[in-house]
Image (cartoon, rainbow, N blue to C red):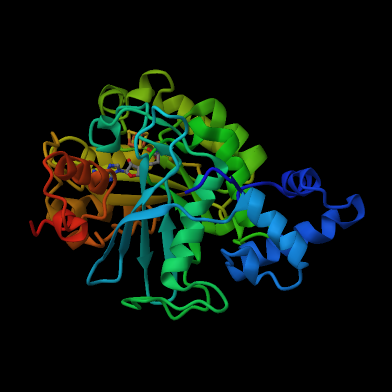
Length: 388
Ligand code: SAH
Ligand code: SF4
């Protein structure tokens, strides 16, 4: 990416002041901003030359000062089931930052498609089962970088009015190929509050990407003070990485629990603005063999969540090289799920997708780093898919 200012990821007001800065007349600011937004967020245009309702002179000026360039694609992997995983390269912020990279995963189903995006490079929280947790935090993503993941994914799967995917494997039948967004990639979104907020507002704005707020889910490890703020100011659907029902265990799995223990966390959920049976909170629970998967734990989970409009998502643990845990046995997951189901929760066990491309948290980035370090990355896609 170049050193020009990226024109996506900015609020309407900021686009207008950027236009003012290049000499657009005051009375034209709103119209020009709204034309630009149509090109950027509705049409998916990446070149100012295509903006035929702007004068040649204005297009020239826009080109001199701004860019609509996306993050670069370091690797793109497409699973046999259509799941796509991208390692995206960002513009370094300052001379000391070496090739910052993030990952983003697209999971198509028959009638919908979910895009999982990152909010930070690395993470400050060291959850012991999560590979991102072993990478130190490099920095927060800008609003443009958060939004850029969605734009790039839409480019690649042809999710624009005139778009066409190079590879159509597994794409849904729905008109829009990305119907849902989950902030479940790298990083803790509520530690990058302002940028996540700006990006999600643009994703939800009817003149922006026009996603329904019910189709955007923010997952947090449980930052109690920011949960309330998230409801008040961003107001998207909330997912909580619970993973343990006893503080002694959750302290180890999700160490931020020492600061905000389970009771406080669940109180914040009870008070989440707008929570109702129609807008439930998702509780994520990663299944770890002999650690959190006993039937006593299942009953405790049901007891703890009583009174909270909740969905429960049981996630088979996805091991990574050197991970200290194992995934629970399938029969145990089923027994656990049965208790949860009997208590009235539809708790689909999240079927692992894109296993052949290792589409799980933190894996692609670390593996590609390792491979690059040993200089075998002559064919990144094959290398990361384990074929080297
Ligand atoms: N930091 C936020 C969002 C990113 S993690 C959070 O923790 O919620 C998104 C989800 O992936 C979390 O529920 C996290 O617990 C889960 N996760 C992380 N590593 C995993 C692994 N190896 N296997 C299965 N789920 C994992
Ligand atoms: Fe960070 Fe979430 Fe991973 Fe914990 S689970 S280390 S909060 S990304």
